[in-house]
Image (cartoon, rainbow, N blue to C red):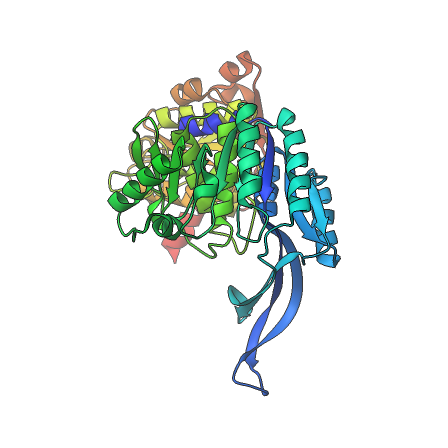
Length: 498
């Protein structure tokens, strides 16, 4: 369990973050790739949905807002419908867009993606069309933008630069932003362009190039972790950074710090649907964590997790604190070979106690029930659903095989404990499963201290093991409704007769 990262997520607060960079509108046209066009040998997309999201620096701002930050976004849009749409979306999201200037000399940057589904499933990007100019800002717009950003410094905790090489992040503007930020004691973190000359990022606190970008900037091909660390060290020293952080896609991230740290942070394998926006997510979470006072090591580890969650989604997508926490909980613990144990809900009691303490810090209430759950049937599912409805988290204490035999006889259980635990863990309403060897779950209840103790309505209150203990600290007992017609014993009898 990454308890330190869970604590970090809960301590993120609501920092004020200023994002500077290239604003974009990401437009998605969704449809079924139904057949080949009769006009040409190309796929015909039967469009059925149109969606608009913010991209570039505005994507970073959106991600930060979803994580709970207070965000001001500085950049430019064109004097066109797309620019007005960008500002409207920013307003709807509660992002301060007063620092977004309208530049009549340029169009709003738009990336239009066509997403096709095969047999109404498996969406894939078919084509992207870009509308943009990469011309540098005029001197007048640059000076005005610099003035507005400077005015934000007094109420900012960190400055993030999202450079997509669309003309906003000029050397002059960045030099002014970096100098003003340093004067206010603020960190500046930049996600740089793909290029050979990184001098305009000199004096930043950190930069976050990807593998290809770092290779181009240092004249290297980064095919190994050692090469990535060498490139990171070069950038850190050349640009006078606190830290150079190189993202290495499925291999994680590399850190080269001015204090001599040279570290690699691996990432967990993910089902990758779309890498679009992964760099923005890393930037957003890294900035959020640093603004909350975290060191680079935990900030990078957290950004690694958030970036992994983002690539599991299609297009540029946000990730919430709740999703990160859920992923941290499910990552819980792993077997010695690195593979997940069961479906990542099966815990031993000490690890479960730690997990539940983290849940309580989030203000969540814990329900507990127990049983043999030998041959799972619809009555069990309804019972567990009712148990889960009593609190935010449901823990199931599962009788061991020996415990079941002592209760049910030598022919039970039908299914061994590992199989029973996996079946329970596969239910969405069950959050944790733990096995107990004792005749009753009393010792487990004393350890976990649930807020709600759940048993079936065939028990009287005084027969519920642990009831008086739970009520002694303000918890309660809930007797769940039993559904007629469902019985494991009866089901086994019918199977035997068959």
